[in-house]
Amino acid sequence: MHDDSPVPGPPQEAGQDTPPNHDANAAQDTDPRAGIDEAVAALDDLEQLPVAEHVERFEAVHTELTVALSSIDKV
Image (cartoon, rainbow, N blue to C red; front, side, top):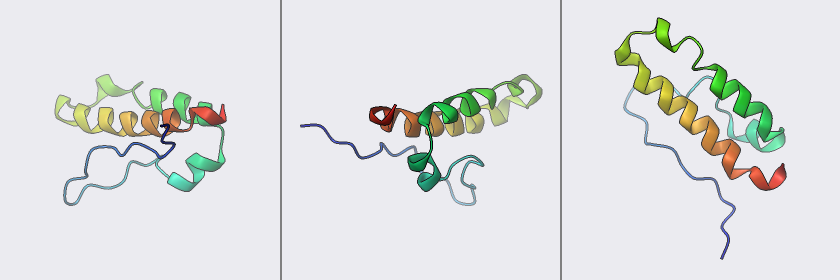
C-alpha cells in the first residue's frame, strides 16, 4: 500500500510562526526541486545565528525537505 499524503512535521509550539517558505498549496503546484535549494540555502547563514536558534532553523529546513520528499513522484 502506497500513501501519497505528506508527512507532517513536528507540532508548532504556542506563538511559533509558520516557516517563511512554507505554503502547502504552492509546494504542491511548483517543482519540488526548487524548494530543496531554497531550504538548504536557509542554512547558509546558520553560523551567524545564536546556537539557541539553530534548532528552529533546522526544523524549518526539515519541514521544507519533507514537503519536497512527499512530492517526489512529481519529479
